[in-house]
Image (tube, rainbow, N blue to C red; front, side):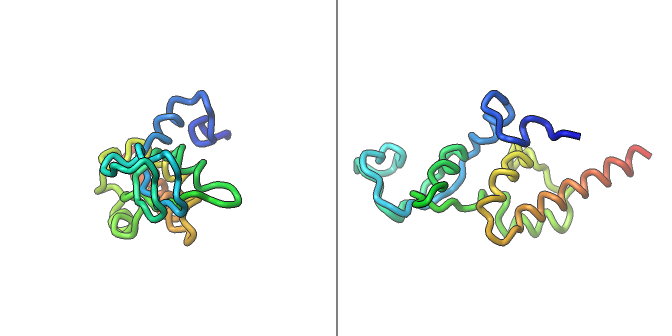
Length: 139
């Protein structure tokens, strides 16, 4: 069974467009000239190395790829350690739409930033837990 189009990158998918609009924290590794407008709190024209910003996921993916990445992406809040512990304890007690409207789609992109593989594990755990709950209720 093929996955819905939103789970594989698709330029024309509305779900994919909305998922990649999620703001993701990142840190700049290099000085970037004439991009100071990305940081509304700074009056400078250039972005300095070490600047932390939240950028759309589509931009973070492009800027962190390649042989010399410009930024290092960080995990969004919902995929960090404290939230992972909550999701592991009881995934059904958490309203996923409150944290991210496209939890699974964003997770499928963000899991590539996670070196330890915890995001993949939590996505699998939450989806399995939700599936078992739905199948239990439907019986």
